[in-house]
Length: 400
Ligand code: HGY
Ligand code: MN
Ligand code: MN
Picture 1: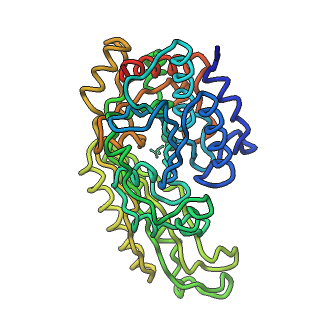
Picture 2: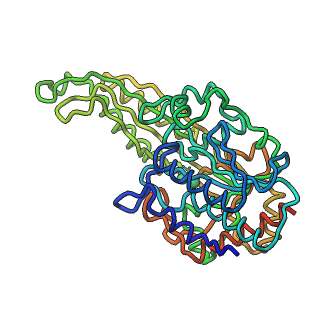
Picture 3: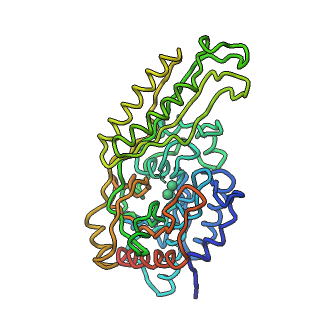
């Protein structure tokens, strides 16, 4: 008799990749995330599941034989730098708890079923969010993957080989292409459920969002002997662009974020020769994102010209507005109760990436702080168990 609980499993991994401030840094295929992968494999094996790590660095834990029309559930184990304890792992852990309790209850799936851990959902290592699900669904090609370079400078193919994976085998995965559905449980990244006073919600949609990289180049020089009129300092147009991004978001009622800036060569007494910033922009509608980003890019070019610098923009990723499958959502409502709250989200997820390939749905678990991608991200033990029970009920219905 297993008495697996979400809180107990979360406690088992609580020290893996934990920073002094209580946040987590678990970058895809790096030491701490590999430790989480090994932990997951051990737990899934303990449940009698069959493990397959595919060519896209996703891990599949099959209950019975792999096969077409599979019901899939899962999430990710990687985090953003300085992320929370729940974003990703809660979905994987609740899936393990659901399987343990179904097995205890003598449930026998009538169709192939797997718990899946998707690679680099945050894109924090290789710069492409939902990397594993984009590769498995064919949204990102092998060539596109081979061009990715990790933030530590390691080309993706090299990181794959280091992890014992053949980068030449990267490609669409039949198990995904022919699956019947994917259900992802995730800690809510917002206060919707906290304000409603409810533990679990069903997701309706993911709002459109994208990432852009702006590379400004200028002229490196001496901080002490170069007069201001003689400078071509790329950090100045970066600063003006960041301010413009905030103003644009306030005017358009959307969100823009610059959370990552890289200044080279990075000397205190050196005028930068190059400065790169990354822009994350999200809105209710895709055309709002497009309009806002175009405005920011125009400001960036004008600011670069003014400072005798140059800027090149590159769109790194785009996720269109994604409505989850109506049929699946209604089945989830039938199972969990028609009064279950339904919420959209501004956060991206593998379930949104896979929505183009199969019916997908999501469950959210209350986060009292609403904060995420930081150590303040939270979920009570009771709500984590409520999430696991809800996921179990939905999966049990789907595997009948
Ligand atoms: O960035 C996001 O929206 C998600 O947490 N990966
Ligand atoms: Mn996240
Ligand atoms: Mn996530």
